[in-house]
Image 1: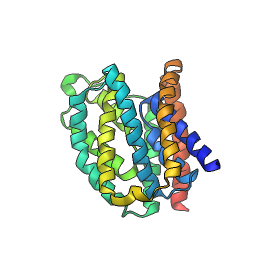
Image 2: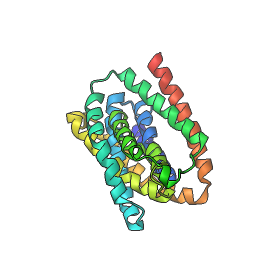
Image 3: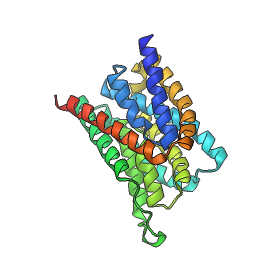
Length: 248
């Protein structure tokens, strides 16, 4: 019963973050699965991909109805990240657990610092370089495949700054990209999903999907800057714990 309650609570928090910020929930899912629910880093990253995929698909439905997904841009980003996601997914199962933990800690810390610094100004259309969307898409795919995170914290700023989308459109457009990358990575992880504890993963995923809807309502009531800073501080704490775990 305790494990079930922990899975539901952690999933709800991840969903709230996803719904409130349009990304970042996946980067909390993996540490929660490791430190609260006892999964190994390799199993947690695979489970994180499943959770990210389910929540992304759920959110795609809502954003399609709201017409906030720019499908041509999403397909271009997804195409750039497809191969890196598949290769990184295959490599993740062969890497040492401590290396995965350390890499995750580094990514979480960098994401937190970026959020605390705030968004970069959008470049004029004429100065946006053509290679940036492709490079960002490839990097996002590799990150998703290796660490089991959706990468919305990377995709959304890139879609705003490099492509010039509005924040709402960037959040919606990032979702198909994340879903494609997660699917590609899962496909190359072989039978990794077969050994997962579904008594933990199923309630965690269900709570995350439901929590994402409440997160949207929360975002409408609170300042986006306040939510982002709070999340960034939480991410720094997570990064510190995981870094210590990798070193000690």
